[in-house]
Amino acid sequence: MIVLKFGGTSVTDAAAIRRAAAIVESRRSRAPIVVVSALGGATNILLEVAAQSAGGQLLLALRSVEALRERHLAEAEALLGGTREAHDVVSEMGAMFDELASLAGALSVLGDLTPRSQDAIAAIGEMLSSLLAAAAFRAAGLPAVHVDARQVMITDDHFMKAEPDVDAIAEAAHRILGPIVRNGEIPVLGGFIGTAKSSGITTTLGRGGGDYSASLFGAALHTEAIEVWTDVDGMLTADPRVVKNARLIERVAFDEASELASFGAKVLHPSTIAPAVRLGIPVYVLNSRNPASAGTMITFDAPRRPVTAIAGKSNVSLVKVRSPKMLLAEGFLHRLFKVFEDHKTSVDVVATSEVSVSLTVDDPTHLDAIIVDLRALGDVAIERNRGIVAIVGTGISDGGASMSRALQALGNVRVYMLSLSATGINLTVVVDDEQVKPLMQRLHAEFFERERA
Ligand code: ASP
Ligand code: MG
Image 1: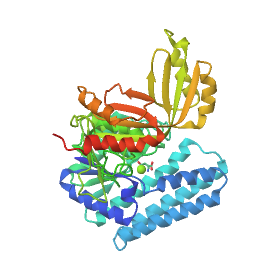
Image 2: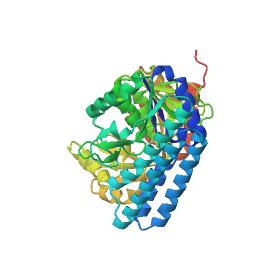
Image 3: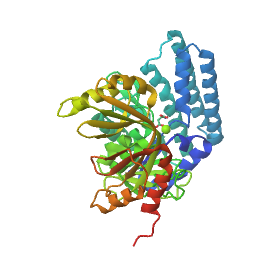
Image 4: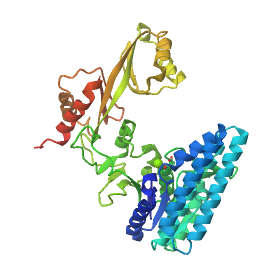
């Protein structure tokens, strides 16, 4: 068995859904289970509809509902026009849109947007896309069976970020998906959506939850692999806009992918695939517009190499706190980080010495208030125009050779802060903003573009 997950861009219209059907066909001998996202952009529109309805803009909301209906019907017509089941699918989708419109109406009366009602509305995107994809696959000659994902994805009732109930999902997956697959058919379900075990009410796993669904279904059934089909070739050794010789990483360790996740490599969020990777199930990121490309395989045991990727980020603020009070004091760091917690600001890179701490933050919104609170702890300095370059590789701290090459490639760039991750696989340096790109290029050249002896 294999899970094939198609993200929004890979099912965004009839042409994309046809490409997805061809990919499913090519995996047919491996007993595929298909998980789909809502049509590209549909979840955003649905959440807007919910907000507008509750915010007194019902007419605007209903106009979006109608536009979304038109879009789905046009794609359905393109995919199914002339087939016998076209009528059934179109009327089932019509019923979902009617339901959406009445939910919008109810929200506008209540004037109150709860997480529960947001989920009820957001879930419609995957309910529609999975119904449409299943019918389109059948029209393309595949034995596809639509399954309401809410029967399988059992969760708690933490709406908008529901926690999956792994045992209940395993039970449901074996009971519902197992027989379909054994029968030579292909289950097609929506990602992202689930049902609260306690109440039977619709939940979602949070934005981007489709990958999480795929990973949980794969883990429940111990599938041989999970393929996440998206619109990029996979993970690259650097951002190609900065480093023109960036190339595809064919295998990446889960830990490396996690270190790289915060650098805007929006391929997928590693935490969402952890359930599968933990069981040794490889996850592939593949491009549905370029299915011949090898993609990137994410596993626990990728080859150990000094450097897997170079990542960079600009517009970072560096915060430095110096305090003699810190010497031999316990709880100092606790008080320091509490300030950031109080201002809901996440800290990225940290380095400390006996009497000073430096750290970086991405989001400067609350920096002024943070500085005021930090002054109670010691002398505070802020440097706003900094950037981060991270050198990530499972072998970067094996021996000293790779590390010294990396440090040498820094040249005479001024370094404000340096940090090696606890896992030893991420060497991060904080430099002047304008040094980020040239430094990434130099490091990439050093590790990927040099003839090695
Ligand atoms: N459709 C959902 C979203 O856009 C889930 C997903 O695509 O993974 O967040
Ligand atoms: Mg998505």
